[in-house]
Length: 630
Image (tube, rainbow, N blue to C red):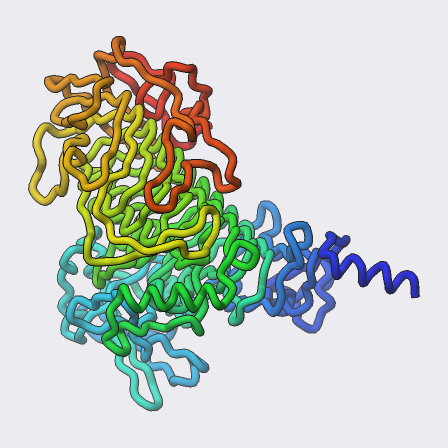
Protein backbone atom coordinates (compact mmCIF):
# COMPACT_ATOMS: atom_id res chain seq x y z
CA UNK A 1 0.00 0.00 0.00
CA UNK A 2 2.87 2.39 0.83
CA UNK A 3 4.45 1.74 -2.58
CA UNK A 4 1.19 2.60 -4.35
CA UNK A 5 0.83 5.85 -2.40
CA UNK A 6 4.38 6.93 -3.25
CA UNK A 7 3.73 6.17 -6.94
CA UNK A 8 0.53 8.22 -6.91
CA UNK A 9 2.36 11.11 -5.24
CA UNK A 10 4.94 11.24 -8.01
CA UNK A 11 2.26 11.15 -10.70
CA UNK A 12 0.15 13.88 -9.08
CA UNK A 13 3.07 16.26 -8.52
CA UNK A 14 4.46 15.83 -12.04
CA UNK A 15 7.88 14.81 -10.72
CA UNK A 16 9.96 12.98 -13.32
CA UNK A 17 9.94 9.22 -13.08
CA UNK A 18 12.31 6.74 -14.66
CA UNK A 19 10.32 6.04 -17.82
CA UNK A 20 10.46 3.24 -20.34
CA UNK A 21 12.12 3.39 -23.73
CA UNK A 22 10.06 2.05 -26.62
CA UNK A 23 11.64 1.16 -29.95
CA UNK A 24 10.16 1.36 -33.44
CA UNK A 25 11.56 -0.29 -36.58
CA UNK A 26 10.25 -0.80 -40.12
CA UNK A 27 11.14 -4.47 -39.55
CA UNK A 28 9.12 -4.66 -36.33
CA UNK A 29 5.53 -5.59 -35.54
CA UNK A 30 2.81 -3.75 -33.67
CA UNK A 31 2.12 -7.06 -31.90
CA UNK A 32 5.56 -6.83 -30.27
CA UNK A 33 6.30 -5.38 -26.85
CA UNK A 34 8.24 -2.40 -28.22
CA UNK A 35 11.59 -3.39 -26.77
CA UNK A 36 14.86 -2.98 -28.63
CA UNK A 37 14.80 -6.71 -29.44
CA UNK A 38 11.08 -6.73 -30.30
CA UNK A 39 10.27 -3.26 -31.65
CA UNK A 40 6.95 -1.88 -32.80
CA UNK A 41 6.44 -1.34 -36.53
CA UNK A 42 4.67 2.05 -36.32
CA UNK A 43 5.32 5.21 -34.35
CA UNK A 44 1.61 5.40 -33.61
CA UNK A 45 1.69 2.10 -31.73
CA UNK A 46 4.52 3.44 -29.56
CA UNK A 47 2.52 6.64 -29.02
CA UNK A 48 -0.37 4.57 -27.68
CA UNK A 49 1.95 2.85 -25.23
CA UNK A 50 3.93 5.88 -23.99
CA UNK A 51 3.25 7.75 -20.75
CA UNK A 52 4.99 10.75 -19.11
CA UNK A 53 8.71 10.17 -18.76
CA UNK A 54 8.89 7.67 -21.62
CA UNK A 55 11.15 7.84 -24.68
CA UNK A 56 10.18 6.58 -28.14
CA UNK A 57 13.25 5.78 -30.25
CA UNK A 58 12.55 5.34 -33.95
CA UNK A 59 15.10 3.51 -36.08
CA UNK A 60 16.15 4.06 -39.69
CA UNK A 61 13.54 3.89 -42.40
CA UNK A 62 10.50 5.58 -43.87
CA UNK A 63 7.27 5.74 -41.88
CA UNK A 64 4.11 6.57 -43.82
CA UNK A 65 2.05 7.80 -40.88
CA UNK A 66 0.05 10.52 -39.26
CA UNK A 67 1.34 10.30 -35.69
CA UNK A 68 -1.59 11.28 -33.46
CA UNK A 69 -0.34 11.17 -29.84
CA UNK A 70 -3.14 10.27 -27.40
CA UNK A 71 -1.40 11.82 -24.41
CA UNK A 72 1.39 14.20 -23.50
CA UNK A 73 3.89 14.60 -20.72
CA UNK A 74 3.05 15.76 -17.22
CA UNK A 75 5.54 18.62 -16.88
CA UNK A 76 8.86 19.93 -18.20
CA UNK A 77 10.78 17.12 -16.52
CA UNK A 78 8.14 14.50 -17.30
CA UNK A 79 8.00 14.75 -21.09
CA UNK A 80 7.25 12.13 -23.68
CA UNK A 81 10.16 12.21 -26.12
CA UNK A 82 9.91 11.11 -29.75
CA UNK A 83 13.36 10.85 -31.25
CA UNK A 84 15.16 9.44 -34.26
CA UNK A 85 17.73 6.93 -33.14
CA UNK A 86 21.09 8.76 -32.88
CA UNK A 87 22.97 8.63 -36.18
CA UNK A 88 20.07 7.05 -38.09
CA UNK A 89 18.03 8.57 -40.95
CA UNK A 90 14.34 8.44 -40.08
CA UNK A 91 11.63 9.80 -42.34
CA UNK A 92 7.97 10.51 -41.52
CA UNK A 93 6.10 11.17 -44.73
CA UNK A 94 2.57 12.09 -45.62
CA UNK A 95 2.88 10.28 -48.96
CA UNK A 96 2.34 6.97 -50.66
CA UNK A 97 4.63 5.73 -53.40
CA UNK A 98 2.80 5.16 -56.69
CA UNK A 99 3.78 2.96 -59.63
CA UNK A 100 1.91 1.37 -62.55
CA UNK A 101 1.65 4.65 -64.45
CA UNK A 102 0.44 4.32 -68.03
CA UNK A 103 2.17 6.40 -70.70
CA UNK A 104 0.05 8.87 -72.65
CA UNK A 105 2.15 11.17 -74.88
CA UNK A 106 4.66 14.06 -74.78
CA UNK A 107 6.16 12.90 -71.50
CA UNK A 108 2.73 12.60 -69.87
CA UNK A 109 1.62 9.59 -67.85
CA UNK A 110 -1.70 8.70 -66.22
CA UNK A 111 -2.85 6.65 -63.27
CA UNK A 112 -6.37 5.84 -62.08
CA UNK A 113 -6.79 5.11 -58.38
CA UNK A 114 -9.96 3.94 -56.63
CA UNK A 115 -11.13 6.48 -54.05
CA UNK A 116 -10.92 3.72 -51.45
CA UNK A 117 -7.12 3.98 -51.81
CA UNK A 118 -7.22 7.30 -49.94
CA UNK A 119 -9.39 6.16 -47.04
CA UNK A 120 -11.25 8.93 -45.20
CA UNK A 121 -9.25 11.78 -46.75
CA UNK A 122 -8.69 12.32 -50.45
CA UNK A 123 -6.60 15.46 -51.02
CA UNK A 124 -7.33 15.28 -54.75
CA UNK A 125 -10.96 16.07 -53.91
CA UNK A 126 -10.09 18.66 -51.20
CA UNK A 127 -9.44 22.29 -52.17
CA UNK A 128 -7.28 24.86 -50.36
CA UNK A 129 -9.59 27.29 -48.59
CA UNK A 130 -9.61 29.80 -45.76
CA UNK A 131 -9.58 33.36 -44.54
CA UNK A 132 -7.18 35.67 -46.39
CA UNK A 133 -6.41 33.00 -49.00
CA UNK A 134 -6.21 34.14 -52.63
CA UNK A 135 -6.48 31.43 -55.28
CA UNK A 136 -5.43 33.72 -58.16
CA UNK A 137 -8.52 32.78 -60.11
CA UNK A 138 -8.25 28.98 -60.02
CA UNK A 139 -8.70 25.92 -57.80
CA UNK A 140 -5.86 24.33 -55.84
CA UNK A 141 -5.99 20.86 -54.34
CA UNK A 142 -4.26 20.07 -51.06
CA UNK A 143 -2.61 17.07 -52.71
CA UNK A 144 0.74 17.10 -54.50
CA UNK A 145 2.69 14.91 -56.93
CA UNK A 146 6.41 14.40 -56.25
CA UNK A 147 9.16 13.24 -58.57
CA UNK A 148 12.35 12.28 -56.73
CA UNK A 149 11.32 14.38 -53.70
CA UNK A 150 10.50 17.49 -55.74
CA UNK A 151 6.91 18.62 -56.12
CA UNK A 152 5.34 19.20 -59.51
CA UNK A 153 3.10 22.16 -60.38
CA UNK A 154 -0.66 21.70 -60.47
CA UNK A 155 -2.27 22.48 -63.84
CA UNK A 156 -5.78 23.75 -64.52
CA UNK A 157 -6.41 21.44 -67.48
CA UNK A 158 -5.04 18.32 -69.18
CA UNK A 159 -3.88 20.56 -72.04
CA UNK A 160 -1.47 22.36 -69.68
CA UNK A 161 0.07 19.00 -68.78
CA UNK A 162 0.42 17.87 -72.37
CA UNK A 163 1.83 21.22 -73.51
CA UNK A 164 3.61 22.59 -70.44
CA UNK A 165 4.82 26.19 -70.22
CA UNK A 166 6.63 27.97 -67.36
CA UNK A 167 4.30 29.02 -64.54
CA UNK A 168 3.98 32.82 -64.12
CA UNK A 169 5.83 34.13 -61.09
CA UNK A 170 7.60 30.86 -60.27
CA UNK A 171 11.10 31.07 -58.81
CA UNK A 172 11.96 27.97 -60.88
CA UNK A 173 10.62 28.51 -64.44
CA UNK A 174 12.15 25.35 -65.87
CA UNK A 175 10.99 23.20 -62.97
CA UNK A 176 7.49 24.63 -63.30
CA UNK A 177 7.08 22.78 -66.61
CA UNK A 178 6.68 19.55 -64.63
CA UNK A 179 2.92 19.59 -64.16
CA UNK A 180 0.02 17.45 -62.98
CA UNK A 181 -3.75 17.55 -63.18
CA UNK A 182 -6.44 15.54 -61.40
CA UNK A 183 -10.08 14.65 -61.77
CA UNK A 184 -12.21 12.71 -59.31
CA UNK A 185 -15.70 11.23 -59.48
CA UNK A 186 -17.66 9.06 -57.08
CA UNK A 187 -15.45 6.02 -57.66
CA UNK A 188 -12.00 6.95 -58.97
CA UNK A 189 -9.34 9.63 -58.93
CA UNK A 190 -7.39 10.14 -62.16
CA UNK A 191 -4.02 11.91 -62.17
CA UNK A 192 -2.23 13.02 -65.33
CA UNK A 193 1.38 14.16 -64.91
CA UNK A 194 4.18 15.26 -67.21
CA UNK A 195 7.49 13.81 -66.04
CA UNK A 196 9.30 14.84 -69.27
CA UNK A 197 12.25 12.45 -69.79
CA UNK A 198 11.67 10.47 -66.61
CA UNK A 199 9.86 7.13 -66.43
CA UNK A 200 7.70 7.32 -63.28
CA UNK A 201 7.73 3.54 -62.92
CA UNK A 202 11.51 3.60 -62.56
CA UNK A 203 11.83 6.82 -60.49
CA UNK A 204 10.56 7.73 -57.01
CA UNK A 205 7.05 9.10 -57.62
CA UNK A 206 4.83 9.87 -54.64
CA UNK A 207 1.42 11.35 -53.88
CA UNK A 208 0.82 13.26 -50.65
CA UNK A 209 -2.22 11.64 -49.06
CA UNK A 210 -2.19 12.66 -45.36
CA UNK A 211 -3.22 16.06 -44.05
CA UNK A 212 -0.42 16.10 -41.47
CA UNK A 213 2.48 14.02 -40.16
CA UNK A 214 2.59 14.75 -36.41
CA UNK A 215 -0.51 16.31 -34.84
CA UNK A 216 -2.71 15.42 -31.88
CA UNK A 217 -6.34 15.64 -32.97
CA UNK A 218 -7.30 17.13 -29.62
CA UNK A 219 -5.84 19.79 -27.31
CA UNK A 220 -4.43 18.91 -23.91
CA UNK A 221 -1.36 17.05 -25.23
CA UNK A 222 1.46 18.97 -23.54
CA UNK A 223 5.21 18.54 -23.04
CA UNK A 224 6.23 16.53 -26.09
CA UNK A 225 9.67 16.51 -27.70
CA UNK A 226 10.09 15.74 -31.42
CA UNK A 227 13.76 15.33 -32.29
CA UNK A 228 15.87 14.40 -35.27
CA UNK A 229 13.30 13.39 -37.91
CA UNK A 230 13.00 14.12 -41.62
CA UNK A 231 9.33 15.10 -42.00
CA UNK A 232 7.84 15.86 -45.40
CA UNK A 233 5.15 15.75 -48.05
CA UNK A 234 1.85 16.29 -46.23
CA UNK A 235 -1.30 17.64 -47.89
CA UNK A 236 -1.72 20.47 -45.41
CA UNK A 237 -4.56 23.01 -45.53
CA UNK A 238 -4.26 26.83 -45.50
CA UNK A 239 -3.63 28.01 -41.93
CA UNK A 240 -5.08 31.48 -41.23
CA UNK A 241 -5.15 32.95 -37.70
CA UNK A 242 -8.94 32.58 -37.48
CA UNK A 243 -8.92 28.80 -38.02
CA UNK A 244 -7.49 25.58 -36.70
CA UNK A 245 -3.89 25.60 -37.91
CA UNK A 246 -2.55 22.23 -39.03
CA UNK A 247 0.95 22.02 -40.46
CA UNK A 248 3.07 18.91 -40.99
CA UNK A 249 4.06 19.24 -37.33
CA UNK A 250 1.41 21.01 -35.29
CA UNK A 251 0.99 21.58 -31.57
CA UNK A 252 -2.82 22.04 -31.49
CA UNK A 253 -3.26 24.63 -28.75
CA UNK A 254 -0.95 22.94 -26.27
CA UNK A 255 1.99 23.87 -24.08
CA UNK A 256 5.65 23.11 -23.74
CA UNK A 257 6.59 21.25 -26.91
CA UNK A 258 10.22 21.03 -28.03
CA UNK A 259 10.64 20.64 -31.80
CA UNK A 260 14.35 20.34 -32.52
CA UNK A 261 16.98 19.08 -34.95
CA UNK A 262 14.46 18.09 -37.65
CA UNK A 263 14.42 18.56 -41.42
CA UNK A 264 10.93 19.64 -42.44
CA UNK A 265 10.07 20.11 -46.10
CA UNK A 266 7.53 19.98 -48.90
CA UNK A 267 4.34 20.98 -47.17
CA UNK A 268 1.51 22.12 -49.42
CA UNK A 269 0.98 25.00 -46.98
CA UNK A 270 2.86 25.13 -43.63
CA UNK A 271 5.75 23.24 -42.07
CA UNK A 272 5.28 23.81 -38.32
CA UNK A 273 2.17 25.36 -36.79
CA UNK A 274 1.89 26.57 -33.21
CA UNK A 275 -1.70 27.64 -33.64
CA UNK A 276 -5.12 27.63 -32.13
CA UNK A 277 -7.86 25.02 -32.20
CA UNK A 278 -11.16 24.89 -34.08
CA UNK A 279 -13.88 25.73 -31.55
CA UNK A 280 -12.76 29.36 -31.09
CA UNK A 281 -13.27 30.10 -34.78
CA UNK A 282 -13.01 28.46 -38.18
CA UNK A 283 -12.76 30.71 -41.23
CA UNK A 284 -15.76 32.91 -40.38
CA UNK A 285 -14.70 35.62 -42.82
CA UNK A 286 -14.57 33.25 -45.79
CA UNK A 287 -17.79 31.49 -44.82
CA UNK A 288 -19.95 34.48 -43.90
CA UNK A 289 -18.28 37.51 -45.47
CA UNK A 290 -17.55 38.92 -42.00
CA UNK A 291 -15.18 41.82 -41.43
CA UNK A 292 -11.73 40.33 -40.91
CA UNK A 293 -10.66 42.67 -38.11
CA UNK A 294 -13.88 42.27 -36.13
CA UNK A 295 -13.85 38.54 -36.65
CA UNK A 296 -10.32 38.19 -35.33
CA UNK A 297 -11.15 40.32 -32.28
CA UNK A 298 -13.98 37.90 -31.55
CA UNK A 299 -11.55 35.01 -31.91
CA UNK A 300 -9.16 36.63 -29.43
CA UNK A 301 -11.82 36.89 -26.75
CA UNK A 302 -13.00 33.34 -27.40
CA UNK A 303 -9.46 32.07 -26.93
CA UNK A 304 -9.15 34.02 -23.68
CA UNK A 305 -12.31 32.31 -22.42
CA UNK A 306 -10.85 29.05 -23.70
CA UNK A 307 -7.76 29.30 -21.49
CA UNK A 308 -5.29 31.34 -23.53
CA UNK A 309 -2.75 32.30 -20.89
CA UNK A 310 0.82 31.62 -19.87
CA UNK A 311 -0.17 28.72 -17.64
CA UNK A 312 -1.92 26.74 -20.37
CA UNK A 313 -0.72 27.65 -23.87
CA UNK A 314 2.52 28.21 -25.75
CA UNK A 315 5.99 28.20 -24.17
CA UNK A 316 7.26 26.02 -27.02
CA UNK A 317 10.87 25.70 -28.15
CA UNK A 318 11.50 25.36 -31.89
CA UNK A 319 15.22 25.13 -32.55
CA UNK A 320 17.91 23.82 -34.89
CA UNK A 321 15.47 22.78 -37.62
CA UNK A 322 15.92 23.09 -41.38
CA UNK A 323 12.60 24.03 -43.01
CA UNK A 324 12.09 24.52 -46.74
CA UNK A 325 9.79 24.05 -49.76
CA UNK A 326 6.56 25.05 -48.03
CA UNK A 327 4.11 27.21 -49.97
CA UNK A 328 2.57 29.17 -47.08
CA UNK A 329 4.92 29.34 -44.09
CA UNK A 330 7.90 27.61 -42.57
CA UNK A 331 6.50 28.26 -39.08
CA UNK A 332 3.20 29.94 -38.22
CA UNK A 333 0.99 30.31 -35.20
CA UNK A 334 -1.99 32.32 -34.04
CA UNK A 335 -1.74 33.01 -30.29
CA UNK A 336 -0.29 29.55 -29.63
CA UNK A 337 3.26 30.82 -30.25
CA UNK A 338 3.15 33.15 -27.23
CA UNK A 339 5.91 32.77 -24.61
CA UNK A 340 7.96 30.61 -27.00
CA UNK A 341 11.57 30.49 -28.19
CA UNK A 342 12.26 30.15 -31.92
CA UNK A 343 16.00 29.83 -32.43
CA UNK A 344 18.77 28.60 -34.72
CA UNK A 345 16.44 27.50 -37.50
CA UNK A 346 17.36 27.64 -41.18
CA UNK A 347 14.23 28.52 -43.18
CA UNK A 348 14.43 28.92 -46.94
CA UNK A 349 12.58 28.52 -50.23
CA UNK A 350 9.15 29.35 -48.88
CA UNK A 351 6.39 30.32 -51.36
CA UNK A 352 8.55 29.66 -54.41
CA UNK A 353 5.90 28.21 -56.74
CA UNK A 354 3.62 31.23 -56.21
CA UNK A 355 0.60 29.51 -57.75
CA UNK A 356 -1.52 30.94 -54.94
CA UNK A 357 -1.06 33.78 -52.49
CA UNK A 358 -2.68 35.37 -49.44
CA UNK A 359 -2.07 37.46 -46.35
CA UNK A 360 -0.53 34.67 -44.27
CA UNK A 361 2.68 33.86 -46.14
CA UNK A 362 6.24 34.08 -44.82
CA UNK A 363 9.23 32.24 -43.46
CA UNK A 364 7.74 32.83 -40.00
CA UNK A 365 4.23 34.28 -39.53
CA UNK A 366 2.98 34.83 -35.97
CA UNK A 367 -0.04 36.54 -34.51
CA UNK A 368 0.30 37.48 -30.84
CA UNK A 369 3.96 36.60 -30.33
CA UNK A 370 3.66 37.84 -26.74
CA UNK A 371 6.99 37.50 -24.90
CA UNK A 372 8.25 35.31 -27.75
CA UNK A 373 11.97 35.25 -28.54
CA UNK A 374 12.96 34.88 -32.20
CA UNK A 375 16.72 34.64 -32.31
CA UNK A 376 19.66 33.40 -34.34
CA UNK A 377 17.59 32.19 -37.30
CA UNK A 378 18.62 32.25 -40.96
CA UNK A 379 15.74 33.06 -43.34
CA UNK A 380 16.17 33.62 -47.08
CA UNK A 381 14.33 33.19 -50.38
CA UNK A 382 11.07 33.29 -48.45
CA UNK A 383 9.26 36.19 -50.10
CA UNK A 384 8.64 37.77 -46.74
CA UNK A 385 11.01 36.49 -44.04
CA UNK A 386 9.42 37.38 -40.69
CA UNK A 387 5.87 38.70 -40.35
CA UNK A 388 4.64 39.61 -36.87
CA UNK A 389 0.96 40.51 -37.02
CA UNK A 390 -1.21 41.89 -34.18
CA UNK A 391 -0.18 41.84 -30.51
CA UNK A 392 3.58 41.90 -31.00
CA UNK A 393 4.26 42.79 -27.37
CA UNK A 394 7.30 41.80 -25.35
CA UNK A 395 8.65 40.16 -28.53
CA UNK A 396 12.44 39.97 -28.81
CA UNK A 397 13.98 39.59 -32.29
CA UNK A 398 17.73 39.13 -31.92
CA UNK A 399 20.73 38.03 -33.97
CA UNK A 400 18.84 36.84 -37.07
CA UNK A 401 20.19 36.72 -40.63
CA UNK A 402 17.78 37.79 -43.39
CA UNK A 403 18.66 38.07 -47.09
CA UNK A 404 17.34 37.41 -50.62
CA UNK A 405 13.72 37.92 -49.56
CA UNK A 406 12.04 39.76 -52.41
CA UNK A 407 9.21 41.38 -50.42
CA UNK A 408 10.89 42.33 -47.15
CA UNK A 409 12.86 40.94 -44.23
CA UNK A 410 10.61 42.12 -41.41
CA UNK A 411 6.96 43.19 -41.38
CA UNK A 412 5.43 44.24 -38.07
CA UNK A 413 1.72 44.90 -38.46
CA UNK A 414 -0.80 46.77 -36.28
CA UNK A 415 1.07 46.21 -33.01
CA UNK A 416 1.69 48.70 -30.19
CA UNK A 417 4.84 47.31 -28.62
CA UNK A 418 7.05 47.12 -26.84
CA UNK A 419 9.12 44.91 -29.12
CA UNK A 420 12.90 44.86 -29.50
CA UNK A 421 14.90 44.02 -32.63
CA UNK A 422 18.64 43.94 -31.94
CA UNK A 423 21.79 42.76 -33.73
CA UNK A 424 19.94 41.56 -36.84
CA UNK A 425 21.22 41.56 -40.42
CA UNK A 426 18.55 42.90 -42.78
CA UNK A 427 20.17 42.47 -46.19
CA UNK A 428 17.25 42.21 -48.62
CA UNK A 429 16.11 45.08 -50.85
CA UNK A 430 13.42 46.04 -48.29
CA UNK A 431 14.56 45.65 -44.70
CA UNK A 432 11.55 46.77 -42.69
CA UNK A 433 7.86 47.35 -43.38
CA UNK A 434 6.55 49.06 -40.25
CA UNK A 435 2.79 49.32 -39.76
CA UNK A 436 3.12 49.50 -35.99
CA UNK A 437 4.38 51.64 -33.15
CA UNK A 438 6.41 51.12 -30.01
CA UNK A 439 9.40 49.33 -31.54
CA UNK A 440 13.05 49.53 -30.50
CA UNK A 441 15.65 48.86 -33.21
CA UNK A 442 19.12 48.51 -31.75
CA UNK A 443 22.50 47.62 -33.32
CA UNK A 444 20.99 46.31 -36.58
CA UNK A 445 22.40 46.41 -40.10
CA UNK A 446 19.84 47.79 -42.57
CA UNK A 447 20.84 47.13 -46.17
CA UNK A 448 17.44 47.86 -47.70
CA UNK A 449 14.65 50.37 -47.49
CA UNK A 450 12.42 51.13 -44.52
CA UNK A 451 8.74 51.79 -45.12
CA UNK A 452 6.56 53.08 -42.28
CA UNK A 453 2.88 53.85 -42.62
CA UNK A 454 0.09 54.46 -40.11
CA UNK A 455 -3.11 52.40 -39.98
CA UNK A 456 -6.06 54.36 -38.65
CA UNK A 457 -8.68 51.90 -39.87
CA UNK A 458 -8.10 49.02 -37.44
CA UNK A 459 -8.37 48.96 -33.67
CA UNK A 460 -6.09 46.23 -32.34
CA UNK A 461 -5.32 45.14 -28.77
CA UNK A 462 -2.47 45.74 -26.39
CA UNK A 463 -2.06 43.73 -23.21
CA UNK A 464 -1.28 43.83 -19.54
CA UNK A 465 2.55 43.40 -19.44
CA UNK A 466 3.70 39.77 -19.80
CA UNK A 467 0.13 38.56 -20.05
CA UNK A 468 -2.54 37.69 -22.61
CA UNK A 469 -5.07 39.83 -20.73
CA UNK A 470 -6.29 42.62 -23.03
CA UNK A 471 -5.66 46.09 -21.57
CA UNK A 472 -7.12 48.17 -24.40
CA UNK A 473 -7.40 48.84 -28.13
CA UNK A 474 -6.02 51.51 -30.43
CA UNK A 475 -5.44 52.41 -34.04
CA UNK A 476 -1.87 52.88 -35.34
CA UNK A 477 -1.15 56.62 -35.70
CA UNK A 478 2.55 55.67 -35.93
CA UNK A 479 5.77 56.55 -34.18
CA UNK A 480 6.87 55.88 -30.59
CA UNK A 481 9.97 54.12 -31.98
CA UNK A 482 13.61 54.02 -30.93
CA UNK A 483 16.52 53.61 -33.38
CA UNK A 484 19.81 53.30 -31.52
CA UNK A 485 23.31 52.41 -32.77
CA UNK A 486 22.28 51.02 -36.17
CA UNK A 487 24.19 50.85 -39.47
CA UNK A 488 22.37 51.95 -42.64
CA UNK A 489 24.37 50.61 -45.57
CA UNK A 490 22.21 50.57 -48.74
CA UNK A 491 23.86 48.67 -51.53
CA UNK A 492 22.31 50.73 -54.34
CA UNK A 493 22.34 54.47 -54.75
CA UNK A 494 18.73 55.10 -55.78
CA UNK A 495 15.41 53.42 -55.16
CA UNK A 496 14.81 50.77 -57.80
CA UNK A 497 11.38 50.28 -59.34
CA UNK A 498 8.96 48.53 -57.01
CA UNK A 499 10.92 49.14 -53.81
CA UNK A 500 8.82 50.66 -51.04
CA UNK A 501 10.03 53.19 -48.52
CA UNK A 502 13.30 55.03 -48.08
CA UNK A 503 16.83 54.26 -47.12
CA UNK A 504 17.38 55.51 -43.58
CA UNK A 505 15.03 57.10 -41.07
CA UNK A 506 13.70 60.29 -42.65
CA UNK A 507 10.29 58.62 -42.97
CA UNK A 508 9.93 58.91 -39.18
CA UNK A 509 10.38 62.70 -39.09
CA UNK A 510 6.65 63.45 -39.03
CA UNK A 511 4.96 60.53 -37.27
CA UNK A 512 2.00 61.16 -34.95
CA UNK A 513 3.91 60.09 -31.85
CA UNK A 514 7.52 61.18 -31.38
CA UNK A 515 10.36 58.76 -32.00
CA UNK A 516 13.99 59.18 -31.08
CA UNK A 517 17.27 58.10 -32.62
CA UNK A 518 20.90 58.25 -31.57
CA UNK A 519 24.24 56.71 -32.44
CA UNK A 520 23.33 55.66 -35.98
CA UNK A 521 25.65 55.67 -39.01
CA UNK A 522 24.23 56.49 -42.47
CA UNK A 523 25.94 55.72 -45.78
CA UNK A 524 25.24 56.32 -49.45
CA UNK A 525 21.63 57.52 -49.92
CA UNK A 526 20.46 56.63 -46.38
CA UNK A 527 18.87 59.73 -44.89
CA UNK A 528 18.99 60.39 -41.14
CA UNK A 529 16.28 61.11 -38.62
CA UNK A 530 15.95 64.91 -38.56
CA UNK A 531 16.05 65.30 -34.79
CA UNK A 532 19.05 63.02 -34.28
CA UNK A 533 22.06 65.00 -33.04
CA UNK A 534 24.61 62.28 -32.43
CA UNK A 535 25.08 60.49 -35.76
CA UNK A 536 27.48 59.88 -38.64
CA UNK A 537 26.57 60.64 -42.26
CA UNK A 538 28.83 59.66 -45.17
CA UNK A 539 26.59 60.38 -48.14
CA UNK A 540 29.16 59.98 -50.91
CA UNK A 541 30.32 56.49 -49.89
CA UNK A 542 28.82 53.19 -51.07
CA UNK A 543 29.57 50.40 -48.57
CA UNK A 544 29.10 47.75 -51.29
CA UNK A 545 27.06 45.40 -49.12
CA UNK A 546 27.18 41.82 -50.42
CA UNK A 547 25.90 38.46 -49.16
CA UNK A 548 27.59 35.31 -50.43
CA UNK A 549 25.53 32.17 -49.87
CA UNK A 550 27.76 29.12 -50.15
CA UNK A 551 25.22 26.60 -48.92
CA UNK A 552 26.24 25.59 -45.44
CA UNK A 553 28.09 28.89 -44.94
CA UNK A 554 27.12 32.51 -45.54
CA UNK A 555 29.55 35.43 -45.77
CA UNK A 556 28.80 39.13 -45.48
CA UNK A 557 31.06 41.86 -46.80
CA UNK A 558 30.83 45.66 -46.74
CA UNK A 559 32.96 48.74 -46.14
CA UNK A 560 32.59 51.54 -43.62
CA UNK A 561 34.37 54.77 -42.76
CA UNK A 562 33.90 57.88 -40.67
CA UNK A 563 33.07 56.24 -37.33
CA UNK A 564 35.87 57.73 -35.26
CA UNK A 565 33.81 60.72 -34.13
CA UNK A 566 30.60 58.87 -33.39
CA UNK A 567 29.63 58.75 -29.72
CA UNK A 568 27.59 55.77 -28.63
CA UNK A 569 26.30 54.30 -25.39
CA UNK A 570 25.15 50.86 -24.34
CA UNK A 571 21.42 50.41 -24.80
CA UNK A 572 19.52 49.43 -21.67
CA UNK A 573 15.93 48.99 -20.55
CA UNK A 574 16.07 52.36 -18.76
CA UNK A 575 17.38 54.12 -21.87
CA UNK A 576 14.63 52.74 -24.09
CA UNK A 577 11.84 53.83 -21.74
CA UNK A 578 8.31 52.47 -22.07
CA UNK A 579 6.00 51.86 -25.01
CA UNK A 580 3.26 54.49 -25.00
CA UNK A 581 0.15 52.32 -25.02
CA UNK A 582 1.04 49.24 -22.99
CA UNK A 583 3.19 51.31 -20.60
CA UNK A 584 5.55 48.37 -20.58
CA UNK A 585 9.34 48.61 -20.51
CA UNK A 586 11.62 47.04 -23.10
CA UNK A 587 12.56 44.14 -20.90
CA UNK A 588 13.06 40.38 -21.00
CA UNK A 589 10.04 38.04 -21.01
CA UNK A 590 10.63 37.35 -17.31
CA UNK A 591 10.47 41.08 -16.54
CA UNK A 592 14.18 41.52 -15.92
CA UNK A 593 15.98 44.50 -17.48
CA UNK A 594 17.93 44.17 -20.72
CA UNK A 595 21.43 45.44 -21.48
CA UNK A 596 22.43 45.07 -25.13
CA UNK A 597 26.08 44.51 -24.23
CA UNK A 598 26.55 41.74 -26.82
CA UNK A 599 26.74 41.64 -30.62
CA UNK A 600 25.57 39.28 -33.36
CA UNK A 601 28.28 36.78 -32.39
CA UNK A 602 27.59 37.32 -28.64
CA UNK A 603 30.86 39.20 -28.34
CA UNK A 604 30.83 41.50 -25.31
CA UNK A 605 30.45 45.18 -26.13
CA UNK A 606 32.28 47.98 -24.28
CA UNK A 607 30.63 51.14 -22.92
CA UNK A 608 31.06 52.92 -26.28
CA UNK A 609 29.91 50.15 -28.64
CA UNK A 610 30.28 50.09 -32.41
CA UNK A 611 27.09 50.76 -34.40
CA UNK A 612 25.53 47.81 -36.15
CA UNK A 613 25.57 44.14 -35.21
CA UNK A 614 29.35 43.60 -35.12
CA UNK A 615 31.56 44.92 -32.36
CA UNK A 616 34.94 44.04 -33.82
CA UNK A 617 34.73 46.03 -37.05
CA UNK A 618 37.28 48.36 -38.56
CA UNK A 619 37.17 50.92 -41.29
CA UNK A 620 37.69 49.77 -44.89
CA UNK A 621 36.55 46.37 -46.23
CA UNK A 622 35.04 43.84 -43.84
CA UNK A 623 34.30 40.19 -44.62
CA UNK A 624 32.62 38.01 -42.00
CA UNK A 625 31.24 34.50 -41.88
CA UNK A 626 27.75 35.10 -40.51
CA UNK A 627 26.38 31.53 -40.73
CA UNK A 628 27.00 29.39 -38.86
CA UNK A 629 28.10 31.67 -36.07
CA UNK A 630 30.66 29.31 -34.59
